[in-house]
Image (cartoon, rainbow, N blue to C red; front, top):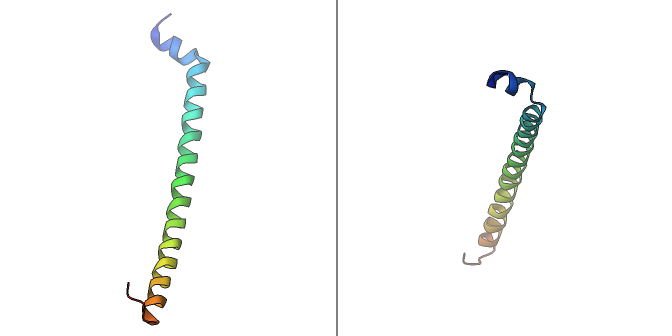
Length: 59
């Protein structure tokens, strides 16, 4: 049996590819969520600093 036939008939390789695709999708979702939360909290902290400066606290 040639190497190509062995690779094409090996079910473990297909399972590994499926796991790799699932991992990539999970990572994309996690990175998107972290980015979204980061933007939201950055705006929140910026607003807090602006309000503290408005009442005269040195920052």
